[in-house]
Image (cartoon, one colour):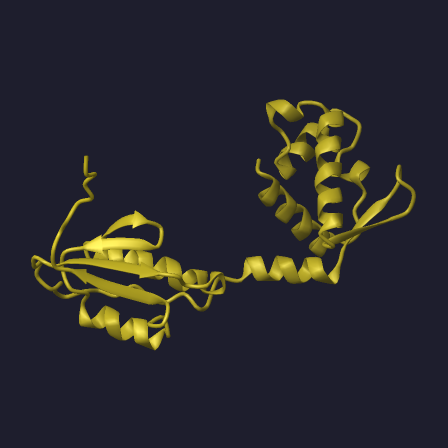
Amino acid sequence: MEYCSLARTLLAHLAEVGPLMIDALLPPHPKSRLARSLLGLDQKRYSSRTAAKHSLSSILNRLKREGLVTRAGPKKKSSWVITAKGRISLSKKATPQRNSPKSIIYTALPPQDNITRLVTFDVPEKQRAKRNWLRNELIACGYDALQKSVFIGRRPLPDELIRMIEILSLDRCIHLVGIDRKGTLTQSA
């Protein structure tokens, strides 16, 4: 199981249940395998209670360094508590992105012409949903990705897409270049 999903599971558990002791999560008897499986620690590398406890402790310490949990009490019998920052982080990840634009259903795409078009964009990380939306729309319009933010196509962009780009205020992040002649770089001898 990945660190992020296990850390998220731990944060959710701390938010719902409250203070947590590692020994309470992983009891030292044969039924501890059930507890490990509920947390996602029941894999070949976590076959023993000691290995699972070590992994759990490592993840909790990483979360502590990030300021998402705190530890109270002596090391052997410490309890872990989620912080306000941890609750905020958990709620941010739980809510779906509201800024995500809907996909456009194109009735008819413009016909291909002999002009090669290059679309480059640099949408900020804060607008990741818009950036992913733009990639999907360019692919739907028949454009091919040269890089993650560079696409090439042989047809004009549909008017619906242009309007939506303006509505989403992405027009200042996108550059469209038409190439009417092809060429190659040659090395002179």
